[in-house]
Image (tube, rainbow, N blue to C red; front, side):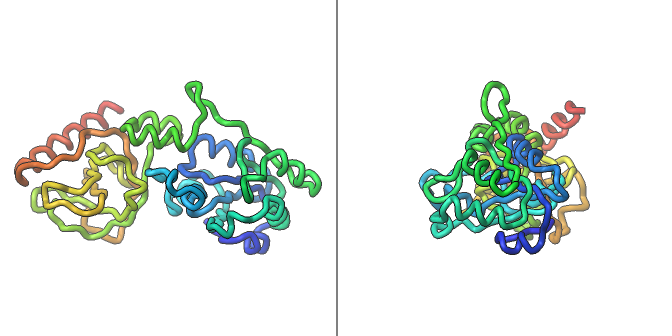
Length: 301
């Protein structure tokens, strides 16, 4: 996927395109409605921001759980058939951009269609609104589409609702709002290699803890292969200062290939992470976890 870091490069690299605007944390069903509204021209792109604006403007209100890293967004958007991604760095200086100036830069990029959620705001003091963007776009022949919120079970689908589901361990609820199981992508890195000494080869993933669900043991798939995963600090083997993701897949071919990246999707939570008296007790519990995971996957057909 082509990625642009500013609107000037976008103008040089693209022509006759539709653009979906927003933060797109999670790329959930509501975000997908905005992307679909932007389709219909030769090319379709997404414009997003990094870091999340709230992390700059009100860090004390920034979410504990960020649903998608930049790499996650690229992967998810590509799977939806998005042709390119524009990632604008959001800092205090950018936050002072006047709404009309930002809109003018958008219109000068060659865009033919713009789509965003009906309540999307932009520019200094959030002075830019969809009605204003529609008015400015109409003057220049740019179609501006305001997309209504997607409602599920009587409530608006939002990244906030998805975070609430994940933090409560409601993976099925998160899946309904996302339109897919929640997942993260990470590079496989070399760990302590303790798992193989007790009979369970594992892959340790380099993933920011800000993208992980609460600590515990989960039924997962890694690159489509069924398995179990532990999120936490591994208290039985001495503990770690940072939360980590360790995956045991029901296949021997992944554990030793430390160049692999894994897309790990979470299906259900088996139990909380806890400390055991010794490695023998830990091994026995892992065996029970694996049995539980296999049974749950088998019941899904």
